Structure formats: structure tokens, C-alpha cells
Length: 157
Image (cartoon, rainbow, N blue to C red; front, side, top):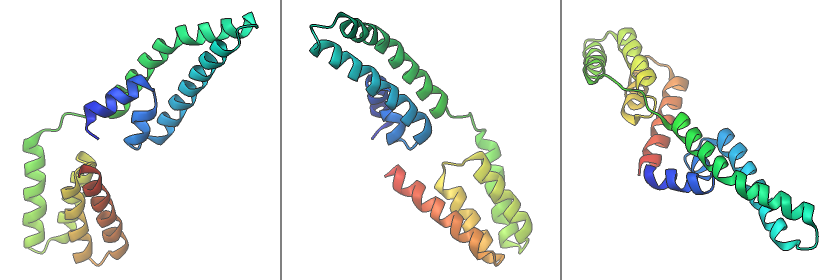
């Protein structure tokens, strides 16, 4: 789903968009509250003979827009992206590639690691780290980086 669609889903049913975008802890907490409020509204509508239950349903209905606003705030907080300097990214890629091609694998690994820190959701940075780690004989690190890159490729398609 596109980011705008996930945001819309998250605003209507707080927590659902966060779950779909794999932010599980925050998503589950908000979704649990959303379902609780909506359940109280539904029960309040069904129980016409009990004023206390109807009042609880009405209060839940009045609280739901605030809960939706909290969901939008949580989306903003969880999904905000940091501004990345393209010149720094280009320089790190150049440093990693040059070091790799000249056999300076330790320097290449440092630059690739900095790229994964700077661009954690970019599959290319993880692929580069995988390549360098394999060249250095670090099979476990290379495999982990490869899995991360594959997962990010799957998410972006």
C-alpha cells in the first residue's frame, strides 16, 4: 500500500496503518484502544434499557476523534524520515567502492556500515555491506545484510 493510503487507514482505524507498515508495538496498542472504543460504542447502541451503558457508549463515541488524532500523531512520529544529505551519501558510496576495488576491505566495510546507518531502509546500502562482508569472510554478517536487503526489496514492491 502506498504511504498515503496507509496514513488514511491509520487515521480512520488508529493502529491499523502502523501494523500494515510493520510498526507492531505502536500499531497493536493503538488498534487495541480503537477496537475497545468502537466496541463500547456498539454495546451502547444495543443496550437501550441501561442508561449507564448508553452513556459509556456516548463517551466512547465522543473520545474516538481524539483517538484518531492520536493515531495520526503516532503515524507522524513513527514514519517521519530524517533529511539525508545526498552529497554525504554519494561520498560514502564512492569511498566504499574505491576501498573495495583497491583491496582496502576494512575501510570499505566501515563506509558500508555508515551507509546502512544513514539509510537503514535502502536495500542498496545493505547489498553493499553484504558484498564487502563476504569479501572479508564474514559469512554471518553478509547473510544478515543480504536478508535485510531482500526484505526491503520485498517491502518496496
